[in-house]
Image 1 (cartoon, rainbow, N blue to C red):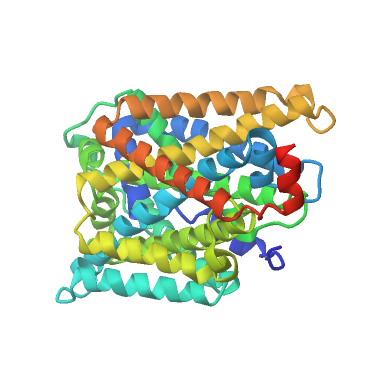
Image 2: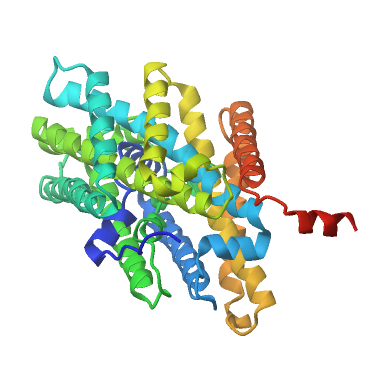
Length: 439
């Protein structure tokens, strides 16, 4: 059994919830989508948030399933077996942890170099930040949660400050500048769903022991409303200060907006947002992957020599940090390949959400007592939307070949890991069992 569950107050739960929603990558994606859709972005944000309400409802249904240990992992095992229970949740989480952390840490290094201390090497800052975040993990999830609140609070406060300043200082001459007509793009529409990816880190990193009595679900709903409003406000301010065409094509859309609003002060504030958002994301991912690997080792789903993953959570962080450092030294960050790898990780994470809905449907069919037929359309609609989004995003990816190869390699590696785990962790056959098997 794992040690006692960790119960965080709502403020820390919300900090985990927003872990991946305040990164430079997310803000860039939001700026690009705002530039493409312009006023229609409000509609897509509302629709995207509704999809995540469906996700949250299906998560709640699995946590409220009958049984003393009802959670996502045991629900997957009951519905699909051990192998999918490992591959589906872990593939997206592991790939995103390694790839996203690499890119974000290097981005934070560049931000620190360009905005704060020009002479300080950007890669040195990235490695220092990696070391600091790994060290935080050594003190356990409670300490990591406190730091998570600090990181998220800085990022949110900075974004709100810039948004309010943008409302106050809206320029009058923007309408005279070149306009970029709003476009409808199916790929961009489904990319909107990536803005809220990682909401389930709240469940991962608080690990509720009892049923979801509504507190986690209400926290998620409140977080969805708050983040969606914040995204909408930032999108509106961005359109008021920067031409839509520049937003749609820029890789630093959030920086363009901040600089137009407050000049150099805006660059400093958005720089703090970028670094704090990076720390929040990497800290949340490290906490999540450590817990997941420890849980899977305990269940015998992965090889665990000396029960290292179960008894020594720092081992997971050490290996993750080693891979991230290797990728940074190898110059992978900032390349087109790592961007493709990140898209693969996010697609796998989306697949996990879809399978959560499918699991609700399958278990509700087998246990009419806990899922009424009137709730059928919610998981069905959620699964259909997410699977359609995955198909569209895969088929329209700018580098489909690399994407498919990386997906195959990633899933194949975890499949091999699981098969080895089953063999290594299989209990020895006694003489009596051997005689029975031969009869």
